[in-house]
Amino acid sequence: MIADLEPAPETVLLDTTVLIDVLRGNSRAVEFVNTLTEPPISSEISRVELLQGLRQHEFGAAHALIDLMEWYPVFEPVTTLAGELGRLWRPSHSGIDAADLVIAATSQLTGARLATLNVRHFPMFEGLQAAY
Image (cartoon, rainbow, N blue to C red; front, side, top):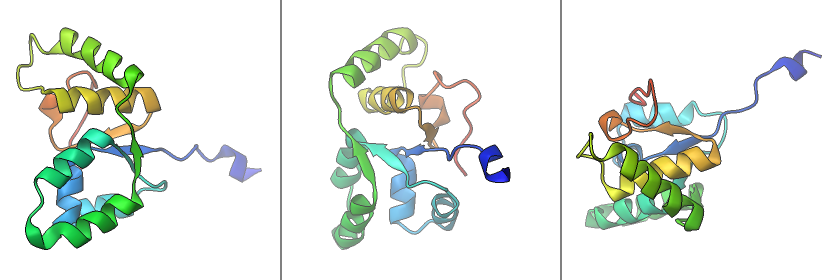
């Protein structure tokens, strides 16, 4: 059957930059998310980054966005891999922070494609391009 030849849907992990753009109504970000065939996922560390940077008028929209997402916890396998990635990549890429490492580890462990605008923060993904 033709349906059997269709590729499996791709899960996409949104990093904080994309989440903020969606929240603030960036048309390119909204269009990008609307083209996804599967609901996007994100790391709990991105939820922290999103919530800490909220403007007062964004609270309602932020919580609506949060409720639509599937959030992955920062648990031992994620922290272990994040530490390994940090030891490997931080010496040559000082702009990478702990949140970037957790997001990268979550993407790798879930098998989800990372969608970000901060390509320089994720050298561990060869060929990574900005989401939009």
